[in-house]
Length: 462
Image (cartoon, rainbow, N blue to C red; front, side, top):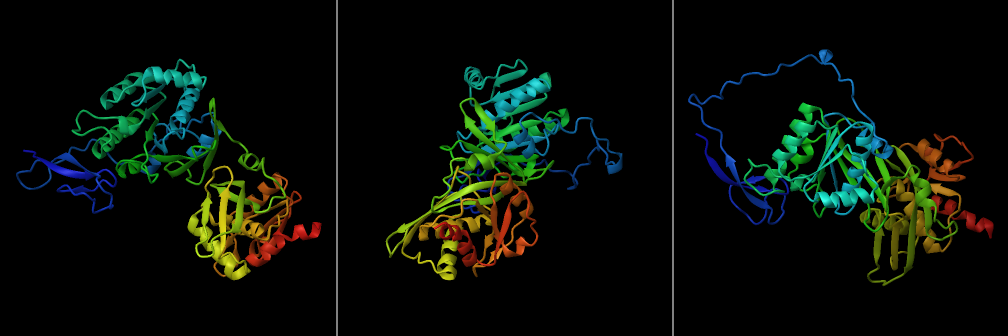
C-alpha cells in the first residue's frame, strides 16, 4: 500500500530535502524550502517492477510521416524570427521577463493576429478578470471574435476548455497562477508549477495545439519555479529591456525547432508593442556626430548586425577612490578595458571617474564592443571627437592587441547601409573584408593604433 511522506522541496532549484532547513544546501538560497506530500510507490510481492503493457512501439525514422502544417507563420515578423519561422503545432513556448516589461501585451497582440489569420485562440488568464482583459484589448485595438477570453486558475477547467474548443493556439498567463486539484500545495509552488506545466505539455502534444506559457522571474532574472520547467517546454523566450526605455528585445535561450541566435526588437507605444525593422537607424537617429566620448559599435544580436552608440565620460575624480559605472555592458569588462588603456596606451585614468553608457537601454554581451568602449573612453579623456563617419568593432586583449570577431562581412555591410564611410577593424580581419558600397575598412593591430586612427580626423580638420 502506498504511503505518503512529508518532504521539503526548494522553490529555487527543485532539490528535495528530508527536513526543513533555513538555507537550501543545493543552491544556497534562504527560506525556499516548502513542505510537500510525496506518495511512495506501492511495494511489489517479488521485489521486481510490475510488468508494463506496451501501448506504443518504436518506428524507424524513415517511416515517420510529417504533418501537413509543420509551421504556420504569424504577421509579427520579429516574433517569427525568434521562433525560427513560425509557430509549431503542439509546441510549448515559455516566455519570461520582468514585471511590466510587456509579456502579456505581446501575447495578446499575437493572439489577435493568430485568431484573425488561422482560427480561434484561447487566452486563459489567472491574474486578470474578464473586465480587465477587455480593457486591455480595447487599448490595443483588438476586437476579434475568434479571440476567446477565459479568467481561470484551475488547471482542469483550462484543459477542459481546450479539449472542447480545440483552438489553434492556447495562452496561459501565467503558469505560476494555475493550480491542479490533485496537488496538495498552493499555486506557484514547485510541485504545482511542475505538474501543471507537464499536464499542459501532454495536452499540447496530444491535440497538436501550440501553447504559450507566461512565467514569472526571480530577482536575478531567471524563470521562477523549478528548473525542470525550462527543460520540459520546447522553447524559452525572454523579453528584456529597461522599464523606462521604450525598446524591448525578445531573445531565445532554448528552441527545439530553431536557432537560439535570433533576437526580435520591439518598441513599446501606447497601442502596444511595435516591431522595429531597422533597429540600427533607430538607435542612431539622435546621435550628435562631433560629440567627444561618442563612438558607434557594430554588434551582432543573433545573426542580425545592429549599430549602437556607445558613450563615455571621463572626469577628474577622487585620486584615492575613482568612481566607475556603466550601463549596457559588463562592469568587469569595462574595468579591464580601463586597465588596458592605462597600461598599454598610456592614459592616466587612475584618478579619473569613468562613466560608460550604451544608448537606448540595450545590453551588449559580445566582446566586439570592446574597441568602441575603449575608443570612447580615450575620446573623452583627450576631449577630441571620433571621426563622424567611423564605425568600429573588435575585441581587445590584455596585451593591447585587437582580435577578430565573427561575421565581419555582415557588420561591414550594415555600416555601409547606414552611410558610414569607414569602419575600424582589427588588422587580421581587414584582409578578409572587401571595400564595398563606399565603406573603407581601416585596420589596426593594437588599441594604441586604433585610438590614433579614430582621433586623427580631428587633427586633420584643424
